[in-house]
Image 1 (spheres, rainbow, N blue to C red):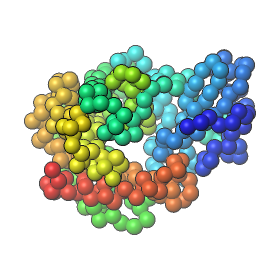
Image 2 (image 1 turned 180 degrees about the vertical axis):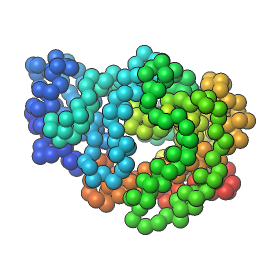
Image 3 (image 1 turned 90 degrees about the vertical axis):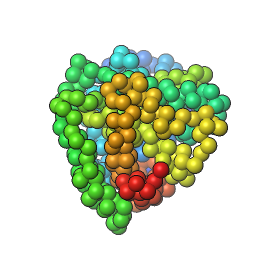
Image 4 (image 1 turned 135 degrees about the horizontal axis):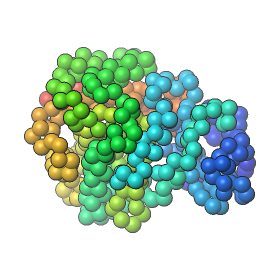
Length: 366
């Protein structure tokens, strides 16, 4: 992507941050946190990432940063889905934890500065993977990249969230029940027409939640959207440099994150770049079973049999949630307020994703 023309004012296409996105005002506000902005030009370039929170790369001769902003109030999602202050809290808490995250420089909750609340963090230069088959690398590196993603996920779940000041980051009870209720409300609020599989899952899931663990056991920081596309890999090495997009993070059950990561192995290639039907062995990509085994060995809190006991529920629950998110994207696209140019195509995936979730819940998918 080429940078925007050098200018002190950039009006990003399709953004609610107008008229216009006032870079001089942003620069003045940021200077106490980034004194290098006192001289030299600051430019902004809209990034394609971020289906719900609009994102820009800020360029200056002495640095590069990323600005993430809340969308407009008519976004069609629950307010907590855009809680950038929660993103900032977890990013700051994870600094030095062993989980690689960008450093945050400033959080602005004053919407008068650029038209929305926002925060600014370091830009981490590296590879962002859009295709889980990793066509640009060989089989050995492909496996190593997938393995390192699981290593980072296990490291996240091992973080002592109390010691990191995150005891109030989420409720400590009934994680799946609350997750199902939340995304049922989200689906209901944004659905233009009922999706049969969503209606069935909304009834089935609450009746099939796994038994709750003892108080405090298995509660961890969950990312909520952990997939290869939200990781920045080193440019030459199969190593994760940063985990991005923390807007859905909370305290919860680690297997919710693991199952979400593994959804790619169940989704067809034509649906959100899934891996189902791909010759994994030929490509060097670990199977779903290998992912689970590696995670169990690294995490140490559950064996493979314990994970597999409720695996269809974990998968179906995450597919239900993903379908609700996709329905929200479709809603925003229909309202003309989507933050991504391909939002409508992405939103159309809600029904097939929900249908896959229902098949898995009924034991009709491998």
